Image (cartoon, rainbow, N blue to C red):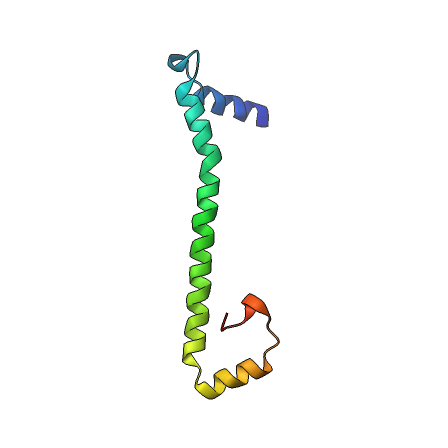
Length: 84
């Protein structure tokens, strides 16, 4: 079944008018291979911006005394801390 699906996709990417070097088909396959890298980079950036904004909101909502208490009692290390 997977072979049949790949044949359908292959016939839609490699078309007869694009013969013999398949410039358009190869461009499509390169685009499909490169797209996940850009998607990962953008997704990671959005995630970390969201996490940093959340931590900043929590940290800024604390009073000076609560900040000092958090710093002295937290067991969080590294990037798990609110003041990272």
